[in-house]
Image (tube, rainbow, N blue to C red; front, side, top):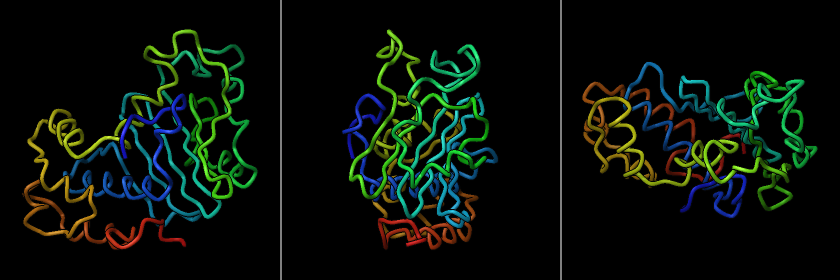
Length: 227
């Protein structure tokens, strides 16, 4: 998986199975770090399938819903000119949900996927019958290629980055050294070893990490556990 995913370059988006594996890796890495307020969370037992979320605590967030019919990504960059908060009437940017397949549209009414109707600046969908990622927006702000755009480029960057990128980010953000080697093992869905997890955080809750790994089929499958 390479490149930086964004709604303007859907070819850089990983396929759903690769995306799922990366979401699992990010969630496990965050759990190993042991933050009380993790950026990345994964609920593999969500009633509709599995739900991966990111919230930076500064007003920016996204949700990736994995269901049997496909995958839906809804994101919100609070500084984006595409934010409904900056649009008269407070409605989503034109075309925002136009490409969402009928089989995934019920997710738009789920508060865990769309916590607030105005919290959306990008939406990307992949119905398993479509065999590709789609986005409904066709006209972007004139300065889209400059930040903030719709937020998809920087918010989804970790889905296309590698263990070094994550380790550097986590070390800087959490103010503690996060070594690259054990992160690389998690990104490759390699064998989980207690000693390696302890390198990430000496106080790691190994049992919790292993429970999440088992629940997400870490190292065994590239598909969510509802299949």
